[in-house]
Image 1 (cartoon, rainbow, N blue to C red):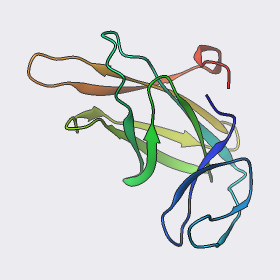
Image 2 (cartoon, helix red, strand yellow; image 1 turned 180 degrees about the vertical axis):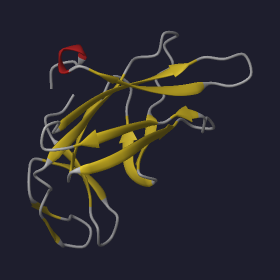
Image 3 (cartoon, rainbow, N blue to C red; image 1 turned 45 degrees about the vertical axis):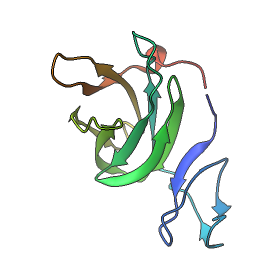
Image 4 (cartoon, rainbow, N blue to C red; image 1 turned 60 degrees about the vertical axis):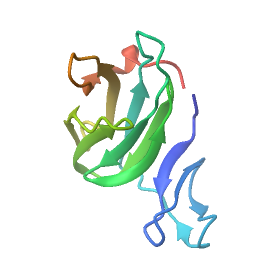
Length: 135
């Protein structure tokens, strides 16, 4: 688990976990993180011990990888966001849409895999802050 924030450089697309405003390690662009809200995502452990992580997509844009039982926090400006996850060959996901507003600055999400007979589906569920592991 990390208290760092996940950020994607708008210039080169490099994804990094950072403590605050930073300089991109790939292209040296100065990055100022949005201060409006945060989407916190927890990847729940697999019931059968499969420790595959997920690819994270926010409004269709890749935001790096989320490891097994890992928590990430993505700073975002106010708006509506759709979360999508992929897992190896599994592209099926019950996408989740969250809204970040001045009244609702934080979104908490748990992601897990639902094992199926023919295919697996990644489930993203909104939850309360009390349901999240400590960061």
